[in-house]
Length: 338
Image (cartoon, rainbow, N blue to C red):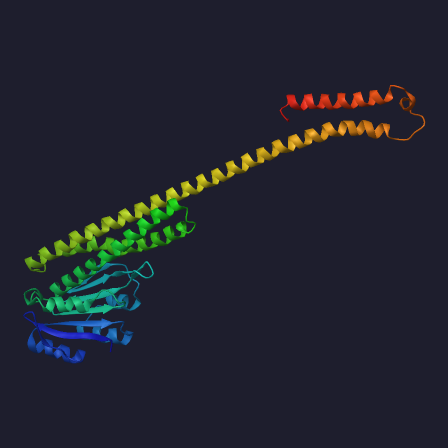
C-alpha cells in the first residue's frame, strides 16, 4: 500500500505506528486518540479501502480518485474535504510545477492523499510532533499545519516568478525574438498559480465562520488568521504578476510595431533613393540618345538625302545634337531629375 506514514496520537504524542489501516482503526478506539494517515499516489482500491474504514462520502472519494480538482473546501456532516494545489519552482527548468493534495479531516482522523512531491508532509509531521501542545488540539491542528506548509512553499514560487518577470523586462528592450513566447508561457504559469491560491482566501473565510460552531480552539484561530494574512499577500503578488505580464505584452507589441515602422520607413527611404537614381540614369540616357538618334539618321547611306551633299550639313548635325541634348538637360533639370 502507498502508505507513507500511519500514526495514532494521544495528547499530542505518537502512541502507535500501526502497519495497516485495520490496526489503526482498532488502536484509535483503544487509545481514544486520532489517526494521521499519509498516502502517496494510492490506487483506486487503496483509496476506497480508506474510505470504507472512515466512512468518507462517496462524492469526496470520487473527487479524490479523478483528481485535477481546483482548490476547494467541502463539508460532509462532520468530515471536511479539502483540495489544495501546492506548487514548487524548478530552478533548472525555470518553470512552476503544480501538484494536488487531498485532505480528509474527521473528528478523530486526518487522511492526506498526495499526488506530487510537494508539499513536504514529512516536514509537517516532524514539526507537529515537536510541538505536542499544538498537536494535542487534534485533527484541526494538523489541517492548520498542512495549510501553513502549502502556503509557505508558495514563497519560493513567488520569488522564482518575480525573477522570471525581471528577466523578461530585460529581454524586451534587448530585442530578443523569443520574449513573446516566454511571456505567454509565464502568463499561463501565473494564471495557474492564481487558480491555486485565490480560492484559499474564501476557504479560510469559510473555516473562520465555522470556528465557533465546531468549537475550534482559540489558538488555532490565531494561527489560521496568520496563514490567511500570508495567503492574501501571495494572492496580491499573483495579481501584480499578471498585470505586469499584460503590460509587458503591450510594451512588446508597441516595440514590435515601432520596429516594423522603422523598417518600413527605411525601405521607403531606400525606395525613394533608388527612384532618384533611376531618374538620373533615365535623364542622362535620354540626353545621350538625342545625338545618337541624329547620328544614326545621317549615318544611313541613302543617295536621296539632301543633307548629305549640303556643305553646312555636318555643322548642322552637330548643332542639332547639341541643341537637343541641351534642351533635354534643361527640361530634366527643371523637373528635378538632375
